[in-house]
Length: 117
Image: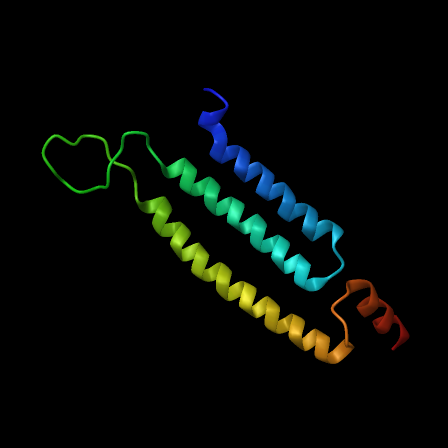
């Protein structure tokens, strides 16, 4: 296999590490949610890349077609995208409530205010 044949997987690794770095190194809760979304997108790309068969067609019965791509991975990823959007929206709603309560979205400042109380 050549390097360009594995391009999708390199993109997955880069996006996964960027998202992981943002989650670990950021103290801002909104930035952490963005990092989780980037990480999640890399997982989606990985599953879609694994489900692709070179030379495969849509699973429609026709004469002369013997190689089909399995649509199950694409269907699962569509469901995961919907769940991911809902989870991100819930996380943003929680961040809004935290900002209303503490006046900040910085993790260190929230911990400091909790210790004072």
